[in-house]
Length: 288
Image (cartoon, rainbow, N blue to C red; front, side):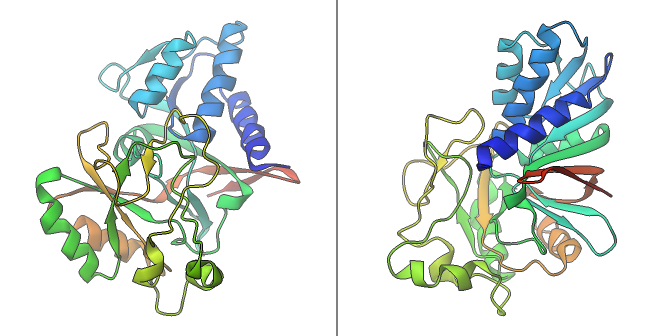
């Protein structure tokens, strides 16, 4: 089963969980896009009459184009469900579902919409399930003016921040090492004992984003060092932090939020109530 097929499985399963009359939050990213299309299919068939709130301009526009009733949190401040993907999912020792989100650049709005929902269902393929958060670069949304203040403070925490750049055809932020870095790929991405990725391997010159296809509807950024800085829907910058092992995510989250100029970070701790994970064995379900 391909990753794309696994995403399709969980998207269909999530769409089946939506009931008539619900107010549904729409996530952002490749899996969320598949979910929106599946959900729109049910609406178009007359199986559902629902209202929606989107977590990004891209998801809002997609849902509207598919004939769905999309409003804002001003009109619908309480949601029954929020369904979205994630870049990493970890089932913590306490049974909670901890996530890293923000590869698509919508972490602030995603966290706001998720916080308004009674239930947050996370939909991912099995490659996103990890034993400890941190392989995927942790996004931190920052006020533009505060960038020169925030970046060195994140670096002082050992988080190795890199400013995200825009204008790409990527399927999410997926570092791919090549050349000399290829030999060290396994070590660099397997959470080294030093807790953080070596700086030279975090975002080397050889960094690339695989699976490049036509422009993804929710992820639009390119390798650091080229183009212009990526700007979120709220007009902020994103610093992607190559943290390595995040052994104490609550502590890391508090440290980041304590920096003036940080708007939000991509650690979604204990927010998801269910994770649907697609893979060779179908859809597995993890409940918090």
